[in-house]
Length: 52
Image (cartoon, one colour):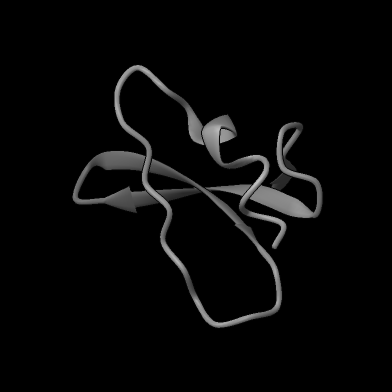
């Protein structure tokens, strides 16, 4: 995993799902939470929310 430059304390991880690569930012200590962004935004949309 590599450090995420947009989300402090998170790491980027690639997941292969039947030949499709999905990139995830993984971090935190609470229960799992999935944050999705729309097109054309990126995961950086969640920079103010994810650390909470």
